[in-house]
Length: 194
Length: 329
Image 1 (cartoon, each protein chain N blue to C red):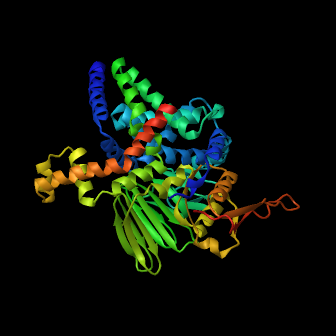
Image 2: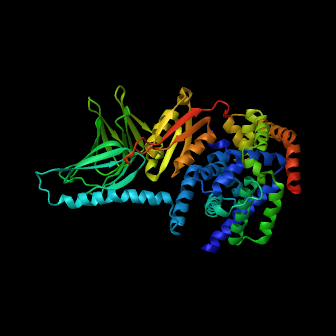
Image 3: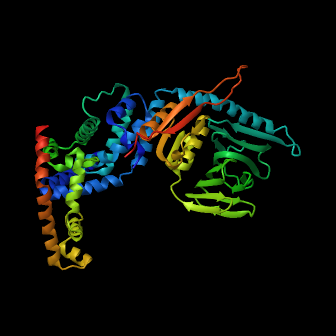
C-alpha cells in the first residue's frame, strides 16, 4: 500500500486544481485501473477503454483550473468516463438501438456499479461471497462460466468425474444466490433511485 | 477500412451486450469478482507515463513554461557554453599538450551536457566529471564523482570508459547510469541499453552487464548483479525523484542533494520509516507537504543564511521529527 493512499478526496481535488502533480498522480493511481475495467464494460475492448480513460485524465489536467466538482470526485470521474464511452460508440456509428440496450443494461447490472471498481464495502462483500465457495467449486465455476470450458473438459483437466463437475457448478450457483441475491437486488434498487 | 473496423466494433459490442443481458445474478457477481481481479492487472504506471508525456507535449506547444523549467534552462546554459568552449578549445592543442576539462554541478541542480564526441551526459546534483582534451585520442576517458547518466556515441576505435575512485566502466556505445558518490559505500551501475564491462575494487573484479541488469559494488561483498526493472534508477534525469520502500535515512540524503539543503533527522525512530512515492518537478515545499500528509513526520524549515559580506552562509535546513499522535493505518 502506498502511503499516499490516505489523502482525502476534497484535499486531492483542491490540490489538483492548484496544479499539484503529486495529487494528480495519487488520483490517477487510485482511479485509473478501476476506470479502465469499468469503461471496458461499455466498449467491450480494454485497449479502447484505456485510451478513453487516458484522454479523460489528460483533459482533467488541462482544465484543472476551472474544475468544479458539484459531486464527489468518484461520481465525477465515473460519470465523465461513462459519457466518453457513449461518445466513442456514437462516433463509431453504432446503431442507436444498440446504444439504448447498453444504457438499459448499464442501469441494471451490478457490473456498472462504480463501487465494484474501487476499494469499497461492495468489493469486500463480493470477495466474501466468492470466497465462501469451496475452492474446488469456485475453480470449476470459473472454468465453466468464464473460460467457456465444457464440463467434460473440466472433468478431464481436474481429474474429476463429469457428475462431480456438474454438482460443483450447481452448488456454486446456489451458494452465490444465497449470499448475494439480496445485495444484488439492493444495487439495482439504488441505481433506480439515483 | 474505417467502415470495416466500425462494423467489427459493433459486432463485438453486440455480443458483449447480449452476454450482459443474459447474466443471472450469480453470474453477475462472479463476473464482478473477475473484473476486480482484472483491475490488478491494468498497467497503471505505463499509462501514467503516457498521460504525463502527452500533457507535456500538448502544453509545451501552448507555450506554458513553468518557472521551474525556465530556471533549469538558465542554469544549463552556462554549462552548454562551457561544452562549446571545450570543443573549440580542442583544435589548437597539440598531441603532447593536454588540457583537463572539469564540469561540476552543485547540490540542488541537475544538468545535461554534450561531450566533444557528442556523447550526452546527465549529471546529477553534487556530481562532477573530468576529462582531458583532446577528448577522442585513441580512447575516451572520463573521471566521475557522483551520479551520471551516459548516452555514449558509438565509436569502436575509441573505447569509452568511466573511472570512479573505486571502479571502472568500459563501453563501446550504450546508455547507462552510474552512481559513485564518494561518501557512499557502494558504486552502482545500471545498464539500459548496449553492453558494458564493470571492474571494481582492489582485486579488479570484473563483470559484463546486459541490458536490464544492475550491478552494485561493495567493498566487503564485491560485485553483485541483479536483473530488475531499472526505470527508477535513471528517472532522476527527467526530474523525477523516485522512492520505493526507501529508508528515511536515504530519503533524507536524496532530498539534500536534490534541493541543496541540509536534512536533520531529530528522532531515531525515523530511521526505520520507509517511504514510497514519486515526485516529478516538485518544489521543496510541495515535497515536504506531501511527506507530512502521508506519514507521521513533521518538518520545520530554516531558510539559508547570508553572511555580512553577502556571501552564502549556511544552506537551508529542514528538521524532521516524529509525530506520535499522527499514526498511519
